[in-house]
Length: 221
Image (cartoon, rainbow, N blue to C red; front, side, top):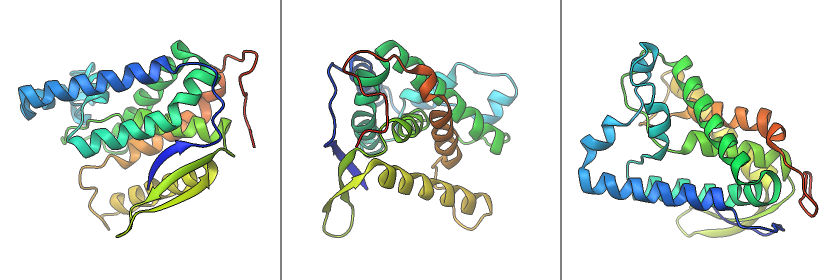
């Protein structure tokens, strides 16, 4: 499912943090294309190395790396649809950046907790963006999201954020549990980073609120 637009959006400002994050991810991806996959792997996070206290900085750098155009575009679409309103209409850009990186950090730590001996490099903004989805679900659960179901013929649908994000989280949770039990192969997807980031977003979003006149503070219809 690909979200396209929040049709209930009433933001009063420009989401500078979201725009900056998207720009930074695009620049880093261009550097990946120029320098090759080995360059990217040098900045990816390896859980077993973090457990040994090595390359701790990769927890941050890995948030800007992607394995291909589809990975990048999917993450950036989710960041734009669900992040712009939290940024411009609820937190403000500085608070949003703090929220984003804290969720990304906790997402990585949760993945490491689940599989501390893993040697497969982890990369992508998905954990931090999962936190954004969790925060959006708390603050704007009734917003109507225009999305496409990726079936043989793409079908446009309008769903509440509660249904769309809830379905997304259920998929991550079931997939993570099945991969943990060896029933399915994770195929390089860090499901537990998504789960950890999402739970962090649920728990932390109100701590980063900065109410201002005209800004919605949650539960909009």
